[in-house]
Structures are given as structure tokens and as C-alpha cells.
Image (cartoon, rainbow, N blue to C red; front, side, top):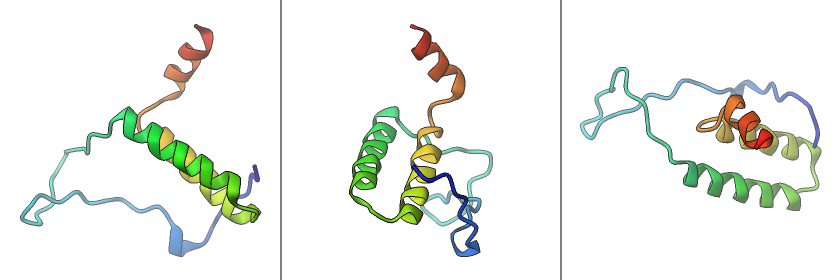
Length: 84
């Protein structure tokens, strides 16, 4: 996998505002994301990664895979799983 940074400001990560049904911003609330959904999306992105020839697109997909994975998993959980 290519280890290049992608610095295009058009694709910069921005804070996401979570809105309620009326369109009002919710404060101090977080979206709950299941590990099953993260696993499913990561698997799909990894499959897509394997079909792409462009190193730039692979780098973007790799960043997306990592960002999505770490929405629910952290380094401590990964190290505990590897130790077991």
C-alpha cells in the first residue's frame, strides 16, 4: 500500500454536525456505530482496494479504511486481540 498523504483541501476531513429530525444541531451527542457495520464497510473497501491500480486511489482507500476501522476499534483492543 502506498504511504502518501493526500493534501487536497477539497477532501479535507471536517467536523460533522449531527442534526435531529427538525434540523437542529445536537450538542454533545455522538452517533452510535456498530462494529458489525464497521467490519462490513472495511471489508468492502478492502475488496475495492484490491481492484484499483492507481496508487493515489489506493492511498485514499487505505486512509478511509483506517479512519473507519478506528471509529470503533482502538490500539488497546487490537493489541489485546493479538496477544490472545
